[in-house]
Image 1 (tube, one colour):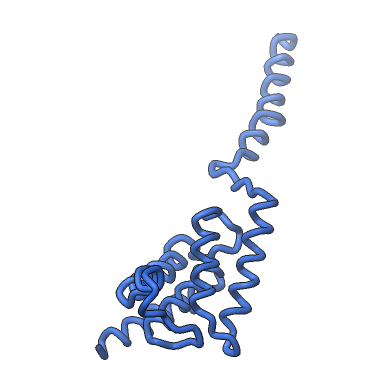
Image 2: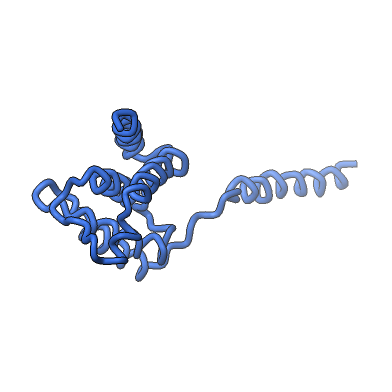
Length: 157
């Protein structure tokens, strides 16, 4: 009888010692594979956008153009939540005619990309995306404040 129980115990030990820990290590949601070249390029665009967003520059059109390029090429950028916040607030500020870069009424591209209605829609979408897609982000609270500011601005109109 003992001869038969030893293999059973060994089999159980194998299952508990090898198989179960291996199962526990499996990640049901695989980590995002980040391309180091794309990540570096996106980081550069974010850094340029952050410079353009400063109170000194207030170059909100530049922020949005950098964001558009990055979001289209690399939506899985590791700091997309920060980029969404900067782009959302830049859209809102431009919709309020704030900033040092003005929208050229003769430029068709400016009229399409920076139309008031589109800027407001984009601002809401970008800030809402932070709240919905990145709930652990340090920008969630600021995004919620931005959404409230947009709402208040619309109520005044």
